[in-house]
Length: 207
Picture 1 (cartoon, rainbow, N blue to C red):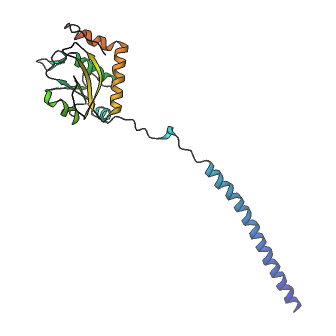
Picture 2 (picture 1 turned 30 degrees about the vertical axis):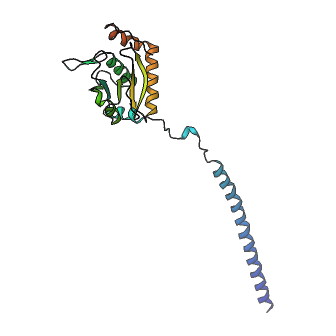
Picture 3 (picture 1 turned 90 degrees about the vertical axis):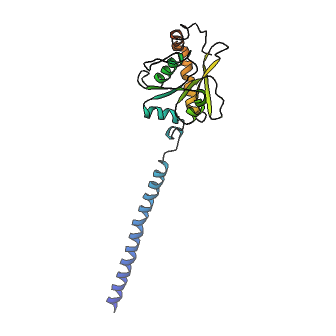
């Protein structure tokens, strides 16, 4: 009986010791996990403006670049500013401005510009429907359209002329404004004038 009691006591002591060892093993694991969780949490990046997606894009400019062509509308009733020769070639001050726009947008002004000569009745719809990207014209009254410029101020008869685009493309409007400013500053506007209106004796200024 005494031997059995001793055996039972030893078994109980061993079980208690084993439990104590298991508890001692578990505690260090918990102590290691907590710092790891804190370290991962503190390493998360903080969102900033540098990683955000830019929204300042022009749908018109994107279409022009995908198409590889700038579509220009010119008035059919203003031969002093643009005329089409029998061979199909367009010449005039408005054509020079169109070439300048194309070059500034990264296009070849000789091969990546198309012209649409429009009657007055089609000016608004041509721009609003996207048939042309930019219309070079005297003012056109329409809530759908926006005017950039003027790009030239002539005499009282001819008045001011503007780059006319869709109303809802503010980025394109700002880009065209910058192109016109640069053309005046670097002398491109003056050169276009001398080759066209200047030779015809038409007095004009950029603004």
